[in-house]
Length: 492
Image (cartoon, rainbow, N blue to C red; front, top):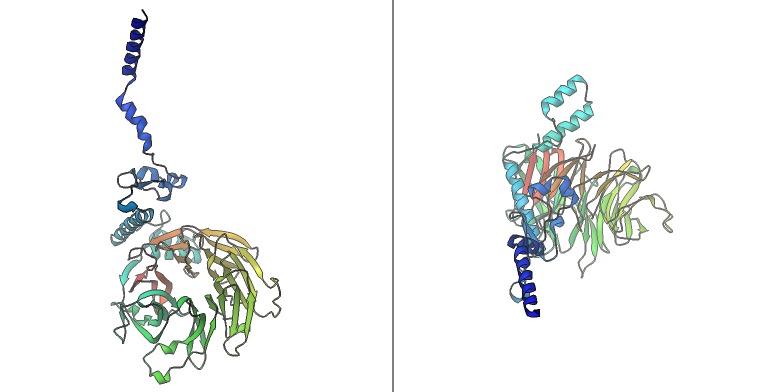
């Protein structure tokens, strides 16, 4: 009885197992080993979860990588000698490169999208005639339309010395006040940098050619900052360089004459007006205020050095952090400084007492290192960018942030800001090698321009935006230097 009883129980249990066995259900439960796709709230709000174009960070899971083309996860498996050929950096670079090529293709096909619905030239003109738009608003919106229609054209660079062009990568380009010339800093293959000046008078021609003059000197130091002095000594224009020293040599600050980069005889060229060795240098600025005439500042490690190039007098201001960005005000002899600690403060260079930190004026604070400062024309507002990718507009009267310009990308690089108040535009190049333009009025992102070259640490574009490239009768547009190439984005 007992044996037959247990046999019956076994048959009954096995029949229940057969009824409860479902192959599809079994596979469905075991698919939990491959995680489902996770999308952040920002991608859901932008409807990226439907299109499958979610960002890399919100799809990042330990031990897996997400393939946007196949819309699924794959496990990261080690290769030979425990060397994994697939890394997060390589996957992210591949996704960024695909996006860059797609944007370049759209630009070639002239698929331009206006940032404001219903914004076109005829509608703007009609509103202007009806008196619904002021002249300032009309000009600002017209510039937005022109920026969206800019087309890239490559510029041919001619030089008396054939070895100058096409051999070194552009690192920094800085235009003078009149935008007639551009001071260039190029990386040298065997290390160091060399300088040159580009004359933009040929941009108005159909061939888009410019002339580049290179000097015979180069430095083994890394150039961190460049500014135009825009002062005349013996009928000679000067430019200021701020050079960071390498391990064996200290940094230095030099004041170079612009006539050094010309076809004149070497005997007619003046020498450096000012050159002195300092500690590690990060930034420089020239003062245009008459109360502190012929003075320039240098941002160093934990101090600020203000030098008068005529008398040789120097003032030193101690700080708590490295000074990465500087700009002088024009209506008052005040120097604004941005530090690695995120602090922004002003210095009145007329004061003599510098004990303690009581000489600091208008102190502002960012959450990350400040890399660029730009004063607006009225000098009531200060634009600041940091290494967290944040761009903020500060009201100096209330020390409050009034606007934020979102979309900028930066993690550790010192990247400049370019403000054009006449056109109402803000331009910045991110560490992802994208050039972005915002509206100063409402902080709207107007356009994102991809780099013509693949993104890399040594291929971050350097740009100049002006409505008069080449002088008062010049052509408007954006000038971009990448690698050995120079491009012009015209919006005339």
